Each structure stands twice: as structure tokens, then as C-alpha cells.
Length: 286
Image 1 (cartoon, rainbow, N blue to C red):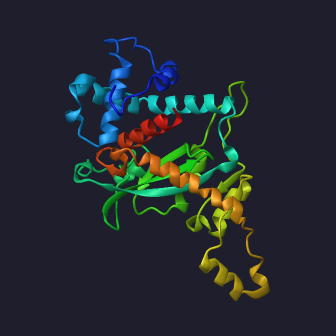
Image 2: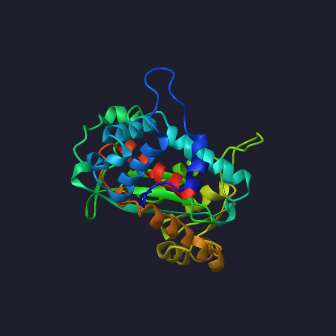
Image 3: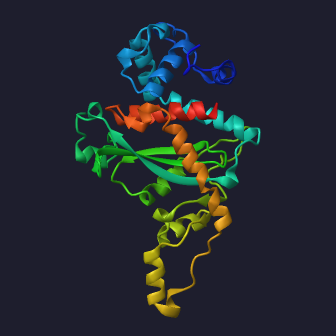
């Protein structure tokens, strides 16, 4: 067994959630061998053509990854693992935290056909989530983790996008169905965020959703409040003890960046890069 391969315990947990053979066409080759090949590529950051022969043809690994990316299989597997953990009471909702991280794009990630602006605005064709920021072409991964440093939701954006702009879409991505029926769990009771999310409108956003915001006050907001005197209102409440728990999202991001294909973006298509993030999240939940 290779260093990046699934262990026996991980495979027993993952196997029941994998799709069966398609109704048309050839049957799938061994799922475990192909997934190990995909994990090898994500862990090492190598090109698909460099996947070792012990994992079978590299085209099979690439085709399986792309096919499951297009039909949403990776996302469904991730959700199924979260449902199982939540049913067993192993998700720490009270320790949730959110943050983002930059990912430098390697030159092989650039050059994709540009999306027409009129179609991208209508949401018909997703963008490739590449932008120019400090350090060159970059993307950004937004993460909301539970109290055990496991991702509850992930999003990808352009590198120059602000963290707070994606707070609401990130919260909308959280969706853990319940085994016995009923509404899925969509919001943690407490969310720890840094000063990038400290503007008043984002605090109000969390308050409307019934989420307690644990965030230090921004310096510019404090000065503006003091300039207004008594009309500036009271400072927002801030619990330093709870805020110390924000380190879980930093740990989660570090674990994601252990995958070299995520620490540096090599995928040209945005949906492929997002699927690579989903595969890494699946391994963290295993």
C-alpha cells in the first residue's frame, strides 16, 4: 500500500457511498485503485500523466475524476459522510469557524477559454475563479469548519475577492440532511471569524440567521464609533475565550494544503479545482 492510499478503515467507510456501475457503457474498473490514483495526484501535485502504473491507466483516473465532478458525485459523497457523522453526534457545531486562504495558480492553470461576461452574469457558465492579486494569478478557498477542524462547507473564488463577500454564500453551502427526516442542519449556533468579517452588515447578517458572531472589533469601526460619541452606540460584544477556538479553521486549512494540488492550483477548469477540494475534504472526514 502506498503512502497516499486509503487505509482499510477508510475504505470500509467510503465504499458504501460510491456509485454503482452505469446503466449504459462499460462497468467501472476497481473503484479503490482508481481513487488511490486520484489521491496520489492530489497529494503530490504531479500531472495526471505521471500517475504510477500500479493505479492503472492515468486516463481512467482522470476520466473518473472529471465524470464525478460533472455529475456532482464528489459533493454527494462528502454530504453522505457528514450525514453519518452528524447522526452519530460527532460534528461539533458549537466550535464552528470560518476563514479563507490564497492559492497561487501555476502557469498550467491559466489559459482556459474565457467565459462571456453576459453568460457568467446570468449564471449559465461558471467562471474559472482566477484573479490577479498580490503575487500574480491566484484563487481563494473559503472554508467553514466544525470544532474538530473538518470542513462543513467550502467555496472557491478569485484571489482578489474579499473574505466577507463570500460569507453569506459560504453559509448557504452548509447543508447536512437529517437521517430521520426533517429540515437539514444549515447553521452553527456560534461562528468565529477574524476582523475581515467584522463590518456591521456582516454582524447583522449572522444575527438575522440566529448565529452568534465571535469577532474582534475592527479598528476603523472603533474609531468611527468613538467619533460619533453617544450616537455611535456600544461596542460589539466580544468573547476572547470563545475566539481562541478560531484556530480550528486554521488547522483545517493547513490539512487541506497538505494536498499539493490544493496548495498550488494546477487545474485549468474551476470546477475541477473545486472537485479536488471536495476530494480532499472527503479524506479529512474519513
